[in-house]
Image (cartoon, one colour):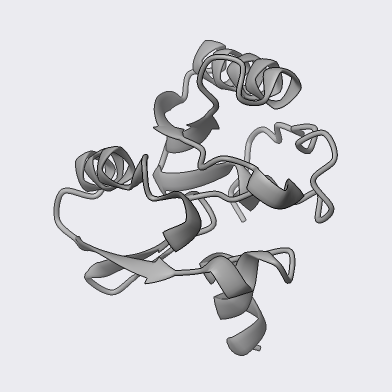
Length: 141
């Protein structure tokens, strides 16, 4: 596939899928978005994502940060479980926590200036341990 290096990243603590798309998405060659928790909402996941973002920046990636929605009721909500296809980016969001939605939309628009960002309400999907990317990957098989 032309890879010259592989970076293995540990999953979010307690996140059941262990998938990187629950906290990170590539937006262009060498560019990505990494989730970010604020303050003490989730101290262990916050430190974990901060360390991953730092590691990737040190490895030469351009890292943008996007806020992670809260983990009310124990489910990891994420904006990074998204899909870029044709001229759009399908980005999950959650009615139960839309406090960070506008900021997430801005981050995605900066990362994808030529695409339209389409928010997809994903509250039901996240309870199945995934969001837009997980559903699209399953449907595309």
